[in-house]
Image (cartoon, rainbow, N blue to C red):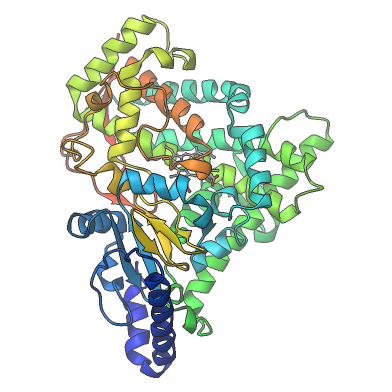
Length: 507
Ligand code: HEM
């Protein structure tokens, strides 16, 4: 939260400006108090903070999910904090998170977006960030029907097969050429995953593209930066005006310039990709991808909406699956006996054949490795903020309209009341014989209810087959000194330093 000290400076330097806001704040609290008195429920416990800025300074470290989990130990699973003028209710247990996602969904079905996200999502034009309304229902149907639903995933099977063969091939080559050097897992996997996301979205991987608005030919790496890396960084940019909406008339030039540039570069690249695709279609090439589907719906979608939905499919396919797969390979490299158990399981089911998606349902330990990694290293530690557009109840507390709701998935997955030794990575905890191991929602990692992750099936198929195939082909060991490299970065719990592993080909 880089901008927090800035926010403080504005308040300290501008007491007069702040005064009007403070009066509004007291008025809002007074009205909420009156409303609450009319119900018998109390407000959630509040984490003490400072006047005006509330708890902002306590959230300076860029890992709010960890701070929230710590506070839950003192204040209980539901508590509220103040981020400047806003009240945020934080949920840290499975029960109350499910209540928010399912039972109370109708009161909490809107999103509260930061200024950065408002710009980067073209004001809620994408499935994951829009409010629950007719537009949402239509576009969710589109992405499921054409790309992420189970029938669509069957159609895209061939892209995943090619991807996994490319990945193993590249690792074999690297190990052959440099047998005594550690391999950087992320370099290979992330690049192949991006290729897959492009094939699903526009029917083709690209090596480079001429972008008219930028007057330059961009390499694949530059395209990846503009479509994936920059917006992920932009999404956590903090504009101090997010916390003090009554000061929104004050310009924040540096922030606006950075986000606007990310926006316009992304627009330019997406337009160039769409133009190329249209040329291929005009030349008679037959392509079957998300863009074709969206174009066939062009009577109901604007060009800007098509561009945004296409970009959404690319960015969401390229990031979280890589995060969870890298953490799984880190944990397996660090735990040789668990890696060995997985290898033996795969051998028993597949023998000398290469693992395929059809075999996944016979490999409970693989499924346990996947779920345990999602639990221990939740790639989406906090669900994108919801907003109470009317008064609601949660966990037996009164939640006033206007509160932001943060569902702390990390907190749920590290709750000591549910998980023994939650800090430990221990796939065996999922082998208790209860429930279907292929069931995707054993942890809260994919959210739940109507807004449950649309890409869970794709993530599971790609991640599980990759993990299994890489353990089938190689014995993994962490490079010396890598054990303690567990710090994380950014919105999606990415491993701060890429996994470096020694790989020994089996057989
Ligand atoms: C391990 C990988 C993944 C994890 C942990 C994950 C997690 C999540 C979470 C927590 C949500 C929010 C649910 C909510 O708001 O309540 C979500 C939503 C979503 N995810 Fe994923 N995701 C993953 C992979 C993917 C992939 C590969 C895609 C493919 C494009 C994808 C597409 C979406 C979409 C479209 C939504 C919005 C659903 C809606 O609002 O109806 N996700 N995901």
